[in-house]
Image (cartoon, rainbow, N blue to C red; front, side):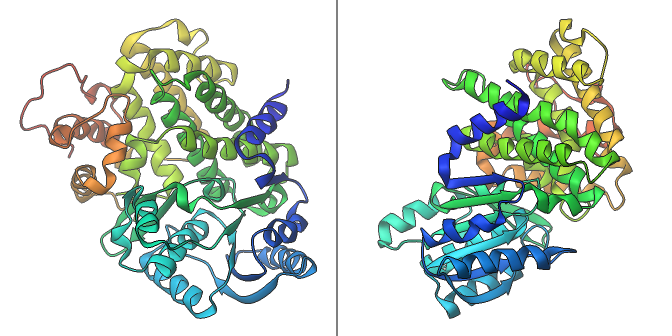
Length: 433
């Protein structure tokens, strides 16, 4: 079975006929939406070439008998609070019985959270964390309008997942809703939409999908679904390794675009099977200097060295893929312990370099010690506790400075040797600056 065939089979296992993907599938939007409701609000992104895609979606909706009550702008990158408030207000005004979003992860995430506010009220802080939307729905008897999410970027897989990332731009901090209640009822991704994606978005999105697969896979040790998580994650990782360099070399390479579409969708499947952890947690505090996927890609090599005692099997499997796709030394999987982790970390850093991603925080324009302070403070926030708990080497909030601090120090300097082994006794005075 080819990687594409494996990917299609896995995505069918995940979503069945509630998700349509491939080339030329935008006309399926009307059929998917009509099964959910007949009076829609369309929340849409604007980007070069978007109008023809929106026209196709609108024509499909109208042909299926769906009334479009309003078309409203989507969200800026990272789904700022101001955009969330605006979209929620528009949903209250037009009162649809079905919501259609078309855009990247930020617009889809914003739409998810906006419908929560419309239906349940209250400040958005009431819902950051895990399962709080479901609890409020059960207590109130309210329901969320069904959501058809149409993805435009091979990236976060927001169209498939229970996550909504919302950003307080003034504070420079992203927070997260995690709840099965906000999973879109139907999803669609026409990979042809990504053919015009710029190099920066292509790399950022693929690196985000890679991070989803890596972090969930590293956190899968001891889980009953380990074997299935491994298949999903390794397929996604392999697709990124093969097709991201190709898509950078030739943005119109249809096979590469399809490969990255499958890869990032499998990243979405991964984060529905398990949770992301350290690199994602830190990325939430870097939103003013790095895009999300690039921040996760930068941080993951340093975190995997910290995790190495708990993820030797996973590191060995990833090492095989690194060697297969020309990253790192041949037979690097024969190494063990920290040496294996450092070899895989350096191989992934080489992939970052190929696609122009910085490999250290120290080389990122605008980076300063305040980003370290912000990241360490955020890691102790109960609203982001799930990320600490998802780590292959789980940390308690009181351990953050002693162990996450050196990981961040390593990322600043580009020195993997600064990462502290968890077994070592913590010592006072460690600084990541």
